Amino acid sequence: MQNNGVILWIGITRVGEKFLPSVLILELKLYLKFTNQAYGRHIDNYYVMNIDDVKIIQLPKLTDPRGNLSFAEQKNHIPFEIKRTYWIYDVPGGESRGGHAYKEAEEFIIALSGGFDVIVDDGINRKIFTLNRSYYGLYIPKGLWREMTNFSTNSFALEFASTLYSEKDYIRDYNEFVKFSGNEKT
Image (cartoon, rainbow, N blue to C red; front, side):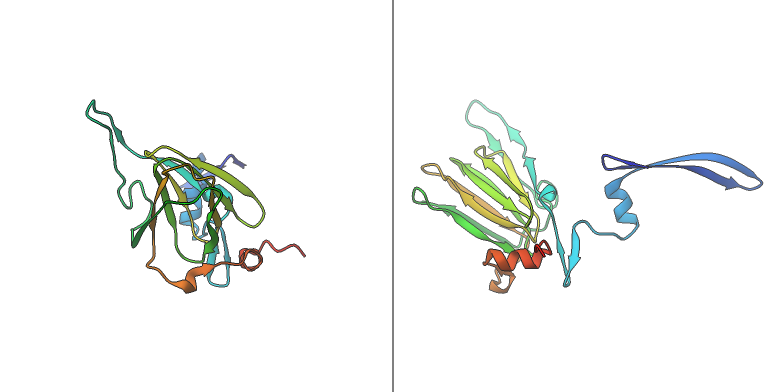
């Protein structure tokens, strides 16, 4: 029986000469881990994620009359080891950034100043995330299209990636991305 990401198994377990009723409740994520199944879909040696794998993560916020402090730690708040850090700033009005997908890189984006929208697309569904607080980050798994738009004046985006820069990791053509994602309409 499955319901909302939880698996409920009801059965009978043999213990010696006795048969006892047993109930097993597992979160779907735990079940997938122990059955060696992966999140997303496996296509051409890559795992392709879907829009539901994108998460807004609240970062610690330490308030102080002298000014607030927030921080992020790899493999804690940021769910991967950081291999690259970069930032986007001075974006002219009406311009967008991104417009690509990564085959391997995971990404974590924080709006340190100002705000902007991040449009994430899995080839079927699109979702818009607004980042405008420095104590929230957006986790984007590999294999998803992303574009950043609607930059406010003086916005500053800090980005962390799970891989070093490699042009080979980028998919810059949307139609190629849809083919890569396996969501091509036939």
